[in-house]
Image (cartoon, rainbow, N blue to C red; front, side, top):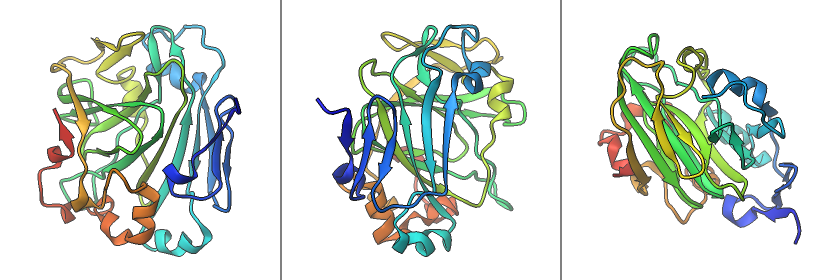
Length: 270
C-alpha cells in the first residue's frame, strides 16, 4: 500500500497529498508562506510527564499561509490565513499526542476574543477548549472545558475566548487538519506553559481525562460534537478552503466576531 494519501478532494486543492510515514506534504500548485516543524522539546513544558521517552521526536508539521496564487490577494486583503497541519499518531508518556495549545488575544477595542475554525481532513481529532476567567492568570479559575470530537468533513469553531489544544486519539492514523484564522494577531503560548498544559490531560488508550493540578478550580469536562454552521459559511460537505475561496467575506467573523450575533454554543452539540 502506498504511503502517500491523496487529499485533493477532501481539502479542495488539486494535487495535495501527504506521506503517512514522513508527514511530508505536497501542495500541487498551491503556495505557502511558512513550513514549521514541532518536536517534543517544545511540548514537554505542557506534558503530564515531561521526562517521558518520546520517539520519534517530531510530533507535527504546520504549513501556514497555504493558497492558490489566484487567492493570494483575496485572503491577504481580508487578513485571512489558511493553514494545514499534519500530526503523527502516538503518545507523550501517558497522554495521547497533542499540540502545545494556545490562547487568542482580545479584539482591540472590544470585549470579545478572536476565534478560529478548524476542519478535519483525515483521521480523528479531539479539540480541548477551555475558557478561563483571566488569561493573564489562567490557573486561578477555569469557567468551562469542552472536549470536541471531530471526523473528516467536520468544521469546528474554536470559540471566542477559549484556548485550544489538538489531540490525535487514533494510535494507527495520522491527523490532517486545516484552519482559517486571522493573520492580524499573534497567538499566546506562555499562558499555557504557566499552567503546565490544559485544564485536563487526556490519557491513552481510552481517553480518560484527569484534572491538571496546576489549576486552582476546574469544572467537569463536557464532551461535544461539532454542528454545521451555514450562517458562518461552514458546511460539512464543502471543504473549508473551497468555502473561503468562493465567499471569503463570509469568514470575516474570524476578524470581527461581532458579525455573528447568535449563540456561539450553537456550533456544538453536547
